[in-house]
Every structure is written in C-alpha cells, then in structure tokens.
Length: 376
Ligand code: SOE
Image (cartoon, protein in one colour):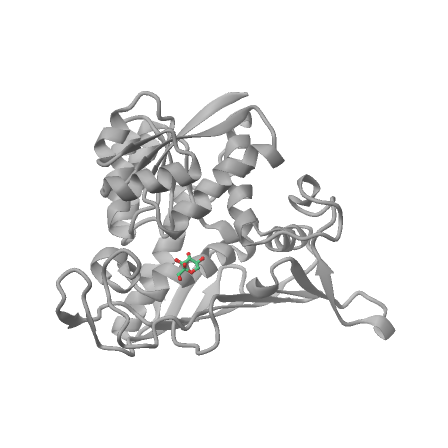
C-alpha cells in the first residue's frame, strides 16, 4: 500500500467526520492507497494537540502556510469556515497539493472561478465534500435514473430543514456559530444546506436553467461572539426557490433553520413518467420507489432497505440487512478519492462541479434580493 499523507486544516464537526473517514476507508475499501493522518493544523496549539492526539494525527501545525511548505503532505483537507477556502485552496494548488475542500466551494462564484483556475493550472486532484451523493440509497437513486427507470422527469423536490437558530440568543460568529456570520459563511441556509440539495439535484437531474427565490432573516440582530456587540444579521435564515431544469422538469427547493422539530431533515422526491423516487435523511438507508410498471394489484410505494451486497457500497460493509449511517457517506467519499488515484479518473464532485452549485446559489440569492427570475 502507498501512503497518502493528509494535512487537515480545522477541527470542528467536519474535522471529525473527515478524520473518521480517513481512518476507516482503507479497512473497508482496501486498495493501492492508504490515508495517513500526517498533520492537523489549527491556530490554537492546545486544541490542535488535543484533537491530533484523539484522532491519531502524527503532528500539528498552527499556521496553514507552514503546513503547505511540508514535503511530507500530499493532500490538504480544508475544513475551515468558508471565507478561508479560497486563499488556502489557491496556495495549496500552487504548492502542488491535492485538495479536499469542505462545501460550499467558496463565498461566491467569483472566488470559485479563481479556485478552479488554480487547481486546473496546477493540475492537482481536487474534490468537494458534498457527502450526500454517497449515501448508498442516494447512489442507488442515481443508478435507477441512469438506467432510465423513471422515464421523462416532471418534478424534483427537495427540503433541508433545521431548527437550531430559532432562539435569538444564539450568537453569530465564533467557533460554533460562524455559520450565522455572513463575513465567515457568505450566506446562510443557501450555501450551507440548499447547496447540498442543489449538488444532489444537479447530479441526479442535470443542469438548472433559471431560478426564482425568496429568502427571510427572521432574527435581525444577534450578538457577535467576537465583538460582544449586537450586530445586524446578514445571512438568510430561510430560503425557498423554484427552478426549471434543462431536462424540462420543474424544481421546488426549501431550506430553513426555523422548522421547529426538524434537526437535519434532508428529503428529496423525483417524479417521472414511469416511476418516482423519494429519500429522507432521517431514514437514510431506505429508498422509496414507486414503479408504475408493477402489476396494478400490487402497485404501490416500496421501501427498499439498501443494505444488500449488490447495492452501492454495501458489498464492503456488513451482511445483508445490517445498515450503515451518516458517517459512512464520508468514508465512501474518501474511498472513491483513493480509487481515483489508482485509476487516474476524475473524482466528483470536483471544484468545477461545485462551481455549478455555487452558480445556482448565487443566482438564488440574487433572485431573492431583486425579486425576479435569474438565469444561471
Ligand atoms: C449545519 O448545521 C450542517 O452541519 C451543515 O453545515 C452540514 O453541511 C449538513 O450536512 C448538516 O448541517
């Protein structure tokens, strides 16, 4: 086995998800390459050391520029808030490192274009962590669509609902709440949650032509964790949009952090001429499937428990019937990245793919601001 030395920047929620994925991938998907947790980089030395010890990183750095200078780092994983993605990614590309970047790719399309240009000029392998594509049930949905089982698609519907910011005392800015600070996050639910829905939609249903959106910021001022002052909230708390897909289907998307009772409810449904598909993150190992070709007396929604060896990724896990969870989508993403090193295939979503998602996000925000349809 060849080593793929990872240098990870950041150690929050995604730092854990990615570290776990690097640790597990080669055990369950053995191949030519094996990730090695070489260095963890974060500004706070004590916290970096604690995280590194817990997850088994061999060393720490407190300045990402020093990490990029190291010859023993092959791939850089960017798990920082969104406002740092561009600078780090461009420098990492110039240093010849492979890059695995957290979503969304960038703060906006202009930044994303620069990042794409940098990785393409340097010729470095790159990937963005839109992990939900690699939930086996979602990958199975892609397989069924590609086999033509749905026929012409009429409707694509997706929601991503949460409720963790309803309390006006939740601050903006700082380690755990930077997602509420426009300076760090770029946008609110559009870049954080709808970006997932858009990435999956572009993958399953093809390009989006135009959008009509509305956004709302329900809590107008929040204390900023860094200044201690109440400041205007500039992110979108909720966003809904309509769109036309290039294949002629109509799209309907909704995301909010104000849906009391919903913690992370990502759902999608696709209605085609011959069949429909739906999926729900809270029951992520199941794919609901309605096939109009079934005999009429038994026709109905079937609930496919995606756990059998001939279903995506499942042959590498337990015996049929035993399921896997959220963290495995990240493990699959690492496994596919490692495989791409062997085969020299492009691994997706790469920066270019994620730029398409960014274009839709930017158009959605512009449409909401201007109250008009926007072309992509
Ligand atoms: C926000 O709460 C969040 O953690 C997103 O940042 C993730 O991308 C999403 O998968 C779950 O929710």
